[in-house]
Structures are given as structure tokens and as C-alpha cells.
Image 1 (cartoon, one colour):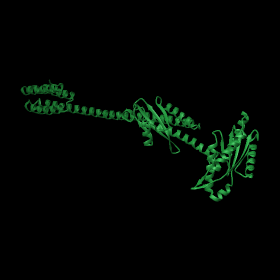
Image 2 (image 1 turned 60 degrees about the horizontal axis):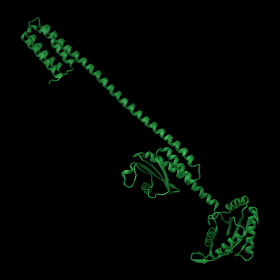
Image 3 (image 1 turned 90 degrees about the horizontal axis):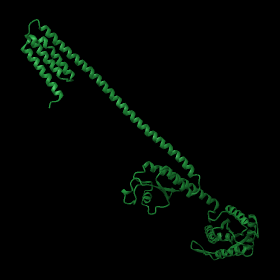
Image 4 (image 1 turned 120 degrees about the vertical axis):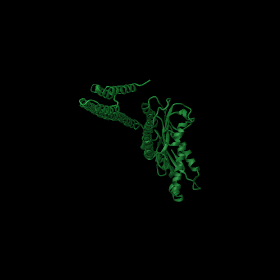
Amino acid sequence: MLSYRTATLLGSTFLFIGISLLLIREPALGPGLFPFYGLIILWSDLRREAEMPIIFLFLVSTAGLLLASRSAPGSGAGLSVEIAGIWLLTWALSWLRGRAFSDQREMAVEQISLEAEMKDDERDFKYYQSYEASVGGETRLRRDLAESAKSLGATMDASEVQRRLIAILASRFPGARITVAASVGDDALLDLASKRRGPVLVRDLRSDPRFKASGSAVAVPMKVMGRPAGFVRLESDQTGAFSPEDVNTADLFATMASLSLENITFFEQVNEQATHDPLTQLHSHKSFQARLQEELLRSGRSQSPLSLIFCDLDHFKSYNDRYGHQAGDHLLRTVAGILMGFARPVDCAARYGGEEFALIVPNFVRTEAVELANRIRARVASEPFVFQGQKTTITMSLGVASFPQDATTASQMVRVADERLYKAKSSGRNQVVG
């Protein structure tokens, strides 16, 4: 079946042929039939057939010249005018078509420009949307970090730091299960984080046979003072619930918690150094004085006994001169270990100064304290202090004071115990006076 365009082209062609045959047969009808050629050209132009008007113009011009040569002398001028009119018509149609084509091209260029601008505006809009979301998320993260730093730094309890960290992450990742583990244990995810020494993200736990679970999970190792200090674990039943940005966020909060734990550890170390003797690890003189005050107040309120034992190594200067100061330091550390072995958790063993030690024993009456002092004396006397393969021996003198029989204040307790220690040394050493 012919298309509409083909049918109209054939119709125009057959009409042109028909008019031409009629003119050949009846040349006298030329001036009246010739304008129909212009209608055919006009019809072809209206049909937007770019080539046909030119072809018809050429054929019409040829036919007109042939017809003018065969017609009477008076009618040739009329045909020439009609041919010129057809040329003028064709030129006008061509000019109008060119003008319309130029307008269409300008419109097309303008449309392309507008579409490009719209695409640019859409791209800019999406960029600003993503930028706004990014800035909003970053602002929220900074606010949360500031609040978390304030919360985590406000406590000196390590277990409280962990609880607050879990609460912070729970608010940041609603619906996720959050735990803090002290060690790897049998958790394959924590083992992977330990081996990688960094955060681990698993979007689909079922994709790896090592994980006997479904969903997704994140593991973040924690370090305190450069040493492993546990793991933060986030888990969800949904696959792909966590993104790399979520891993970075969890790592930031875990790092903040680690810094808080480092501060606690550092504070404890400083406090330990301030309250304990660095050589023997016993309580320092200052810590001993404060503890004695506390125990006297407690004994006074509860009406319970309290005893103080002063200990001093016999001839320690001669020991240092004979074996050297390193041997003397080793001796002091060993004696401190012996005192700690006799001390209960409620007692306070301290290095009072030099080779002199003190032991605060709550709830001990004088006779019990004297008995304990004798056991300590006997143990020190029988201890083979070995230094660099050489066995040495030393003895100890002890003095005992008790509350409330001997004294009621800290200074009185120290004075009485010290006086009895001096008496033990002046009476021959290696004995207890109480």
C-alpha cells in the first residue's frame, strides 16, 4: 500500500504530465493552463518537498519556452510573463522556506541552550542538595562529637566510659546492636579487626562462611596508651545497613572513648606515682600520713582498735657499704614484698623513709599487732636475700603503738611507735617493743 507522501507525489506528477500533454495538443490553451503549473509548484512546496519545486520549475520553464516558440506572435509575451511569475513564486517560496528554516534553527538552538541551562540548573540543584545534606551531616557530627567529648571526659570510671560510648552509638545508629568487648574471644569479626589492626565492615555476613550470622556488622578496635583495649561491635539484621561513612563515624567515637580511657589511665599512673614509693611500690610517706588520719577517724567513730607498726632494718648502712647500693635496693624491694605478704587488703604498708617502713593494721589490738610484728621480724631474719648469686642476711627492729591505749592522734601514734622502735634498736636490735 502506497504511503501518503508517495501518493501525493504521484498525483502531482500525473497532473503535471496531464497539463503538459493538453498544452502539446492544444497550444492555444497555454496562457489559460500555464498558471496551473504554479499551483503544482505551490502544492509541492506546501508538502515540504524540497526537490520537487525545483524539478517542476525546470520542466515548466522548458515547456513554456517550447510553447512560446510554437504559439502565435501575440501570445508569447504573455507566456514569458507567466514563466517569470512562476520563477518569482518559486523564489518567494524558497525565501519564505529559508526564513522559516532559519527561525526553526534559531528556535532549535535556543531550545538546546535552554535544555543545557536546565540540565546545568538541575545539576547545580542536586549538588546544592547533596552539599546541604553533607554540611548538615557534618554539622550534626561535629555537634555530637563535642557533646560526646564532654560526656566521655566527665567521668573517671572506665566502665562508665564504656556505658556512655554504647549510649552515644545507640543514638547515632538507632536499631543497631552495640557491644563493647574486652577481647577477641571466639568472635570471627573481632578476630578479623584484630588482624587488620583497624575497623572492619561486612555488608553481608552470609556471604562469608566465617560468620555464622546474617545481616551486616562493623568492628572497631580500641587502643589505650598504644595497647589493645577492646573492640566496639555494631550489628544489624539488615544487609548493607552500614556504610563506610558509618565506619568512620564509629571509629571517631571509639577513638574519643579511647582518649578518655587514656586520660583515666594516665591519671591513675600519676596518682600511683604520687601515692606510692617508686622503688618498693609501697605507699609513700605522704600517702601514709593521710591514710593514718583516715583510719584514726574511722576507728574513733566505730570505737574499734587500730595499731601502727614501725619497722627499721638493722645496720642497713653497713649492708650498703659491704654489698653496694644495688644490693641495698634489692633488699628494700624484697622486704617490701614481705610486708605486703603479711598485710591484709584493709592494711596500709608504706615506706616511711630510707630503710624504715610502717604498717597500719585496723581492728588490731596491741597484743595482736605485737604478734604480727614478731612474725614479720622472724621472716625477715630467716630470709636469704640473694643478689647476683650471693646470699645475704639482715635483721629488723620493730615498734608498736595502738589506739586508743597509747595515743589518740596521728602524731602521737607516730611518736610512740618511733620511740618504741628506737628502744628496740638500743636494746640489741632484731626485736619487737610494744
